[in-house]
Image (tube, rainbow, N blue to C red; front, top):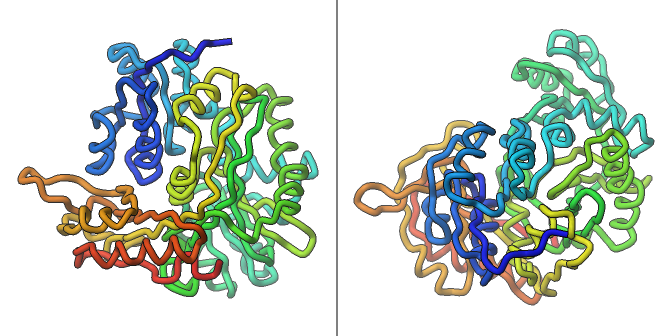
Amino acid sequence: MTVLPDSLAILVLGGGGREHAICWRLAQSPRCRRLLCAPGNAGIADEAECVALAITDPAAVVAFVAEHKIDLVVIGPEAPLVAGVADALRSAGVPVVGPSQAAAELEASKGFTKDLCAEHDIPTAGYRRFAGAADAHHYVAVHPLPVVVKADGLAGGKGVTVAETNEEGLAALAEIHGPVVVEQCLEGPEASLFVLTDGETVRVLPSAQDHKRLRDDDEGPNTGGMGAFSPSLRLTPALQQQALDRIVHPTLKAMRERGTPFQGFLYAGLMLTADGPMLIEYNVRLGDPEAQVLMMRLDTDMVELMWATATGTLADIEPRFTKDAAVTVVMAANGYPWKPVVGTVIDGLPAAEALGVKIFHAGTRRTDDGRLVAAGGRVLNVTAAGHDISEARALAYAAIRKIRWHGGHFRRDIGKSA
């Protein structure tokens, strides 16, 4: 058993809203001696030292960790995981939170996950895999509607089209360069289930629910997420247990049996069908923006939790979460999710946070003269806690009214359905 040091130097990889939320929680721990984030953003700079580093280059990350005497690495986004950064750190003897490159295939390849489900009787939609768009053309053209067309690889939370017509399906294929997965369209409400595991022990995190569509009333194209709330009333304790028993635990067991045990955060996107929960897909990290509401509710020392995960001692700690609800509303740049307009000036954040919210930065930077400007598609996550979701969302939207930014937009119905 690896003893938790009294103080640690910690490196977080990533630069979005999820990583800001993680850094915010890590920085609150008395065990956090020094906190660095690569590349970070303007908001993360308030919590950590932001550093330039090629986070998908395993050798560069290992060299940086050695030079700066880092004790623990927490990997936020999927790209470094798929690039094998966690493997390189483990080989160098560095405690790290995040799955190996082989285990990250659960997100890196939808086809891999579908085949795993088929082999182990894990409930998911019927599917076919194709080497490329041309091979899938005839199948999509004649498939019963609606049909789901997915890029097999990483797509930044997008790359999925639910086609209501064959023409829409063929148009989706035309945008995919590489392997394709075509699925039966499941019916029912969606829900998200998050677990944290050290490879053996599994800790279930609170439920959360995000809003993928760009516009109110779930209209418009899919995005990386326009907001989220926790808890999700859809995922009842009984349904959650079904999902754990039939989907998550069999997946983790299968990965262990393959010799590629999974360690880190595992996010199961579920469809709650008439036949019970079915797997839509896995993400091998915390969701974004779900991480923001989960970190808002976390009531356990984040450093202790991450150290236990990285060192195989998660059985010694049970994460606690407040009974409060939390809501986060994404403020995105005009043009998102296609071609976001960057460089627009943002003001009013101190007045907004004075109401008691936390604003996590997803895509911001500081200009040479100190102004805060948009630097990405999703720019801010205005996050609030309350006794219930209604109270939390009222506070989040009150804070948004204090923000002066003419270059962005947001949904006005986040959490309303709850």
